[in-house]
Amino acid sequence: MARDDWDPEHLPDLSGRRYLVTGSNAGVGFFSCLQLAGAGAHVIMTARNPSRLSRARAAVLAQVPDADLETLALDTSNLGSVRAAAATVRGRVGLHGVLFNAGIVHPPKTRELTRDGHELVIATNALGHYALAGALLPALAAARGRMVWLGSVSTTLFPYDPVDPELVHGYTAWRAYVQSKVATSALGYEADRRLRAASVPVASLVAHPGYSLGGRTRRIAGVSAPSRRKRFVGGLQAIVAQSKERGAWAPVRALVDPDAEGGQFWGPSHTYTGMPALATPSRVTTDPDVGARMWHYAEHATRTEWPYLKGRRLRVR
Ligand SMILES: NC(=O)c1ccc[n+]([C@@H]2O[C@H](COP(=O)([O-])OP(=O)(O)OC[C@H]3O[C@@H](n4cnc5c(N)ncnc54)[C@H](OP(=O)(O)O)[C@@H]3O)[C@@H](O)[C@H]2O)c1
Image (cartoon, rainbow, N blue to C red):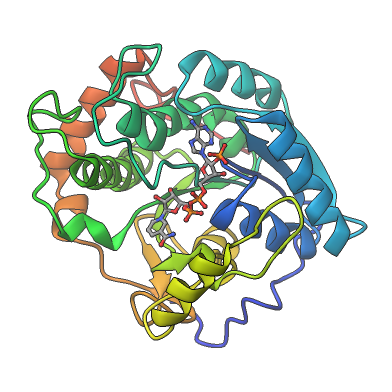
């Protein structure tokens, strides 16, 4: 049962707990790291660009001088990079949570492919995280940890095409984004069903940041520098939009609230803005047929099978 006295600005003490966040250098990912570090967690900040990552690390330290941080290069659109990063983390004693935040939010106008040959947006937002989750599952299981996938209320905007997940036909930037977010969310719920069925002690949840704009976000040297125009546009949308700092509240709650459970969807209480609360997911994302189809697609596209899900059940002492 979710508590209604959760205060996102005063998180429980997270000392001794370890979390990894993808896309840590900006937006929701950066503020998630800041909030986790401020509560005493060890945070593995990851990003694809080393200089942006080191600027983000410095920005966290500027606000939380005793932050316990580690940085790691990780490009979610590149399966080689995902595997290399996972190999660095995998040997650790335990990982209490992973936030699958990295994402292309403004997709290219025309369809692009990754070096692995997949459509760029679904590869970055969904496939890379699916492969990373599988590789980190032993470390998560060792700590009875959690994974949180970043969904979006935009999943209600366009019908999902289950037959053509990479939009070989009919690509548009918006369709690609929505398609990738349906895929990400459906993988999150399917992961929870499969982990439960195999008695793996890892929970999988989905969260979304509402409508979070750079133009509503405070300036942070090296990380967030909204232009005057962006702040003006953000101001015009003040009633329906919030900062990325607040956008991080729901994903962080899904990651650390002791009462949160696998299979849940967390988001701002007023859909686009507000305190982090349980939310109602769009039907397509929780449909087991869509989940199974997405899982099959992700397994083949990444040539990755998650451990533990076949055969014997995992015993964790
Ligand atoms: N903002 C919203 O209103 C909203 C609403 C619904 C869902 N979401 C979801 O929330 C998440 C964060 O959104 P945001 O608003 O914080 O976006 P953002 O400010 O654009 O930040 C996106 C982050 O993802 C990283 N990223 C992009 N491609 C990557 C790759 N190939 N490998 C590693 N990192 C990569 C970016 O790094 P670079 O700086 O290197 O590009 C950046 O750190 C996304 O998954 C998005 O779909 C956002």
